[in-house]
Every structure is written in C-alpha cells, then in structure tokens.
Image 1 (tube, rainbow over the protein chains, first blue to last red):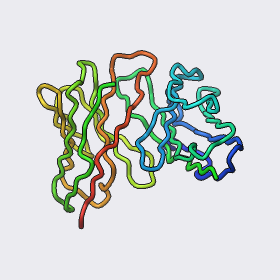
Image 2 (cartoon, chains in turn green, brown; image 1 turned 30 degrees about the vertical axis):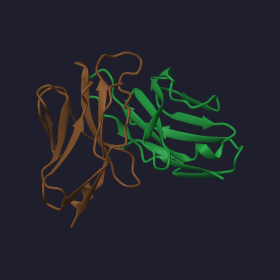
Image 3 (cartoon, rainbow over the protein chains, first blue to last red; image 1 turned 180 degrees about the vertical axis):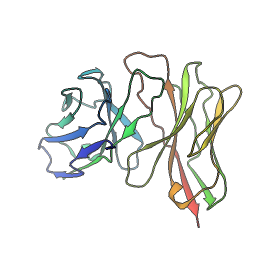
Amino acid sequence: GAGVSQSPSNKVTEKGKDVELRCDPISGHTALYWYRQSLGQGLEFLIYFQGNSAPDKSGLPSDRFSAERTGGSVSTLTIQRTQQEDSAVYLCASRITGTTYNEQFFGPGTRLTVL
Amino acid sequence: DAKTTQPNSMESNEEEPVHLPCNHSTISGTDYIHWYRQLPSQGPEYVIHGLTSNVNNRMASLAIAEDRKSSTLILHRATLRDAAVYYCILRSGAGGTSYGKLTFGQGTILTVHP
C-alpha cells in the first residue's frame, strides 16, 4: 500500500517568500506529525495533529510557522516570510491511534532551501 | 522527556553482529523504548520497540536490562544496507496530548564495512 507522501520533494525559495509543504498520510492514520531536520542536527518535533485538531503545537519555532489538516487526511505546513535559518528537511509522519502498536511511518521529506 | 545516551558512532563488518547500546537511566515505568533508523537521504523508519521484555522481529532484537536503565539493539548479521543513523527514543505510554510524539537525540552513526 501507499506510504506517507510529501510534496514537493525539493523547494528553493527566496528569503521573505511564503512556502507551503504538503503531507499525505497513510489512509486511516488519525495522528499526524511534522518534524524538521536541519543540517547536522537531529530531528526536531514541530506539531502533532489528532484528526483535524492540533493539541500540541509546542515545537513550532515562531508565529511564521502554521499548519492545518483537513478531512482528517492531508496536512499543509506553511512558513511565512521565510528566513535562511528555515532551511531544513521537513518530515511528516503518521500513525494509527487507538491501538497499542504505535509505529510512526515517515515520509521522504521536503528539502527546503531559503536563499 | 527522559533522556537517552548513545555513542556517536560505531563500525562493523558485513555479516557480523552489531550491538548498539543505549543508556536511559531516568526512564519511567510507563516509558517505551523505541528504536528508529534513518538511512541516507530518507525519513526515519521504525525498527523495534519494547517495554520490559526482550523483543525480536524480522529486522532486529532488543535486549532490555532488568532495571530498564539501558538497552541494546542487536542486528544479527549486518549488511551494507544497515548503514544508517540509529536513534534510541523513550516514548511515554502515559497518554495525554503529546501521546506518540518522538524526541530524537543525535543517534549512533553505524558504518558497515564490506
């Protein structure tokens, strides 16, 4: 079956522009997570969705970052007025909830480069 | 979140067993021990997880110390495809709004030599 998909795979933008990153989770996975991985850094949690609501936004680094999820499926991470320090790989993961088996399935990521 | 400590890097030869250690001395009774790995230019992938007992699956084995303050991921026969960063993560099983969130450390870079 299809895994988690993300688009675009690569995005190059100029400083100050807005970008939207998309995540298509595995069908039926109610939990969705965004992480980012900066060069030489570990993975950093950004936001968690349960259905369409986001009970944990604690990892969003500034108010330039926002995310939404619609229909309990697709999620979009939006970065406004991008800065060079936003350059990173943005990873999405999804997970079934309501069971004791809690494996997260990660997508391939979107590599964002801010010039 | 309770913290884990892993060696920065390890090396192995192909077809030999690999033992990747992880220390988690502040683990709580409801914390699950998860291992993920990240191959070059890919997102992380789940390897194995456990709570108290040793666990085996098709990818690896997880040996958990009796006091749960440490664990070891065992790859029985390393292949070149096993070269990756291996992350040992404690995930709370206590529920709450962040249930399932993973906190990644720096992990162990595993190099496998032909």
